[in-house]
Image (tube, rainbow, N blue to C red; front, top):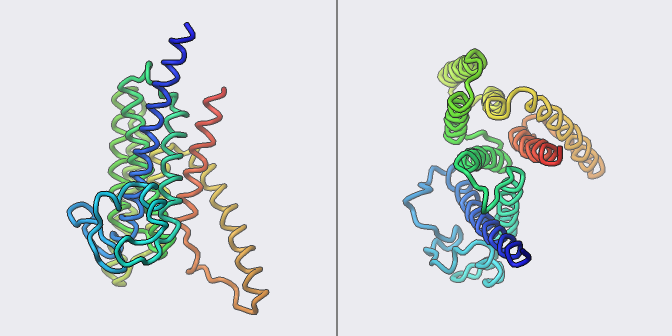
Length: 277
């Protein structure tokens, strides 16, 4: 009996180790996509390269976490320092995958198709949220291509939920109608003023979140988001006032970043609560 338990635990540890590695690999992809997408650089076909010297990176340069550690946080070719955020994001992404698998009660011996599909949807959805948030943090811009990808994932997830457990189609129709109205409005304003409308894109982002997590959880997301913004304004303005600088402007706040962060925090809190109930 003891040997069986040890074997079972070993299998689960191996499964979660694999999940962590997959998460770290996704983290590496997130950093690449965050850098390339705003610059309209191909994220699939174009080989990875050092952004400083342009040298193509070999296999040993691309091993998540380990490459950064063994290379001392520097490019192998030009010795330029690599920002620590790459390592941090890979580690956090690996941890996020493990926590997600744990909250979904994924087990090596009881794993089923529904858990795999749900885990896959969550990963695809988190990819959209992370990329939208990361790009917005860097450029204060909610990228339309990533937003479109997130919308497609949300729509597919709704279809999946309706297939496995049919519910009222009216709720889904309302979400779809909101999407159409917002996208039409954004397209009209883009043509009229020849510029991106940040607020409309932010509302579309929140609608995407609501479609995926439902309106009850999205309300909590909105509350946490508002708390984050209030604290952000207080801390930033205190620092600026000490240095004699002008208060921060609304246009400087990466709202999409904080909305994405609040979404991830809320999902993990809610899933953890459900795990222990």
